[in-house]
Image 1 (cartoon, rainbow, N blue to C red):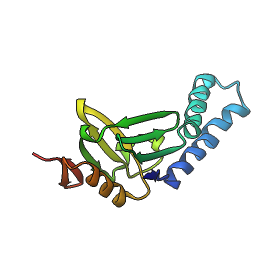
Image 2: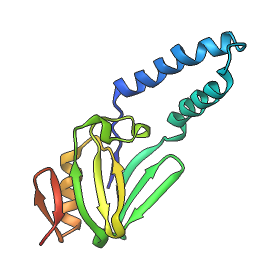
Image 3: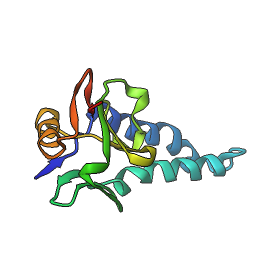
Amino acid sequence: MRFKSRLSPWRVLFTVLFFIVFVSPFLLRPSIPLSWPFLLWALLWGASFPLSLPQYAEFRDDGLFLRRGWRSFLIPYASLIAVRRTTTMPLAPFYLFSSEPIHLLAQAKKRFTVTVADEADFLAEIMMRCPQLERWNFGLRRRV
């Protein structure tokens, strides 16, 4: 079962506006001192959005498959320790372009972040495939 990523229109709009407001003056007047390092940084940051697509989470027989642009991860179900839902914006990596991430903690303290459009079904699917997890305050955690 595949879950599509949730894109926050405000974060996408902020990225586009940042690129227009801060990068376009440097393109129009390249003689501004110290403009080239900032321009290069802004161009790389602006390119991070299309390079981070597609984003999705897929439940497979051997584990949870996360896809974020050219990077992909396969997390075995037995290695999941906790799944936590957050609604705080600063905790979300900016390349996810969403304000409601789900943090996955696996063994060896590996952390993964995913945003899905249908959180309730995503958490229900994890509960079905990971019997070692139980409901907790803001998500799931390993039974004690």
